[in-house]
Length: 80
Image (tube, helix red, strand yellow):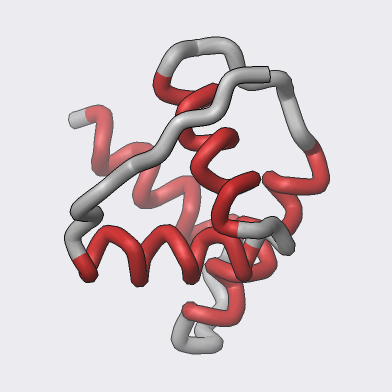
């Protein structure tokens, strides 16, 4: 495997990367590899990562629940 060193990463980008890595239960290195795989179209479907992201997003929510009726209404509004 090849090794790449990335220098001068902006602090804000690094913080976001660190949060994503934590949410996906990965090291920062593993998260960078996953980001590169996604951006180059070579990522495999990873159900565990998707579930981890869904759990992370759920925790970030405001606790409100969206009903089926509301979802149907929002879909309809988006099509008009």
